Image (cartoon, rainbow, N blue to C red; front, side):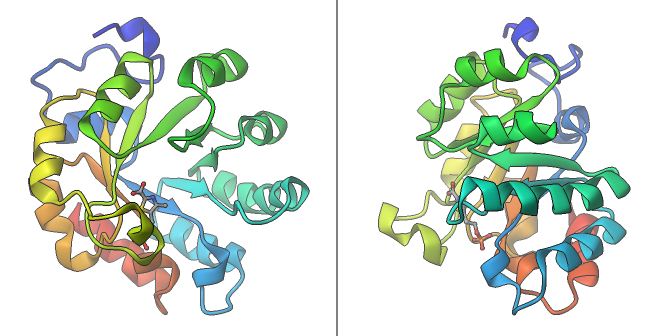
Length: 228
Ligand code: 3NM
């Protein structure tokens, strides 16, 4: 592994590092993904406050159905909260928006800019995460210098049904054995399947509905963090 391409991961990771070591390098094991349409009408900022109070360390701002200008003003509002609670803020897809507001990094979808291009634009200090849907995607993301990979959908989840069958936990296990960058499971992750996912080699999880749609967001975040 070429560590010079992973500026945000300390060079002490080895092929034998366990999952706690790896998630400690990136500084979070729960990535909360936003969906303002899945909050039962509550403002996104309120949800973020609850998550911050509960100790969530990383948020991916993903409101891709609104204009870039609207995304920008919403992301700035969210960033006030993430900064208040020392949470990392990643912008989904839009490297330009990440640069414009000096967010902590970008999360590239599989159809997004190549990692090398994003790295050139953002420099070495920003974190680059990548959405992956196969072992090949993860291996490529690692070799191209991604700081972490999201693998999914692991379980059935409404927004991803059009892409076919979920990958499943056995697949997750085999992917986890093929990479040394932090691997986050995504897609249908719930309190009820967290243990299973972590036991299959995930270094952490990314969640939308299990947190966004929950009445007691603070309590739910705490429960998730305690189980990770
Ligand atoms: N990406 P929930 S699944 C944003 O497989 C996203 O890459 C996925 O929502 C992928 O936690 C997903 O409610 C949706 O299942 C996750």
